[in-house]
Image 1: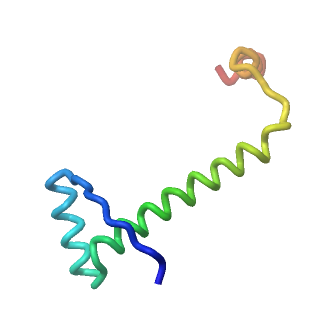
Image 2: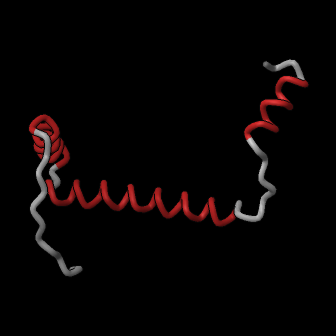
Length: 76
């Protein structure tokens, strides 16, 4: 079992109620639900960072150039 750390977290009352209800429905603890949500969020961040890294060498196009091209092609 991984080492656990205790933290105090304050939830909006309606979010806390929803979280408690979901814990009952899923037979998971609030801690398990919060840990899973944080893991998903951090995984999304890692995916975003990887995408930024992968695209770092792509040529940059200015906003003005995109607008100019859209106008030229009759899209604006």
